[in-house]
Length: 249
Ligand code: PGA
Image (cartoon, rainbow, N blue to C red):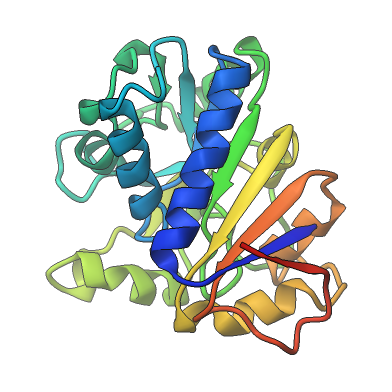
């Protein structure tokens, strides 16, 4: 894993945006795997600014988002559909028909998950996957546990995730307890992965990522098996205890 330390969140966001712009410049019809949460917001802002300056064209890009709460409607302000429109899609020239997010209202969940995986396959697979990281080590909503899933599936959120996400809701009881998420297999099939780690509260899980052990209790640890992962970490989350080659960005 390549480990790039950035002096602050803004620098990290700009660097991640530049990597995405480079990807789209080299392959205008790139397939991006995108994430929600607070961490990628700065990246989306930097991408919107680049688009407004004519530095990137999203017209041929396809997006697959990692996850969506269940059950939730697309127009619910807490949905990830709403999040992506508000923070990214509505500001750029992406074809909304090429923006895939699991349907939080699917009646037949098994079918929804199967079709989601098929759509990823049909697109040629994800070229670049953006990931945040949960304080409990989840990626997407692949929560710590004895078993991890390969493919898109419905999952129950851990109490730690519900607590972490409560800040976006009026009260903790309003946080959905389930979600549809891409599986670990779908994430691992991405050709490149950019893992964003920002803020003091991610310092502990960042350290664990470099302990060179694999555990389903720390889903993010499986990324060590992927051949092209770049960890972008800001100074607040960085730990000098991590023994890894670090590039200062
Ligand atoms: P955050 O969430 O960016 O809001 O910290 C990351 C995640 O849970 O994957």
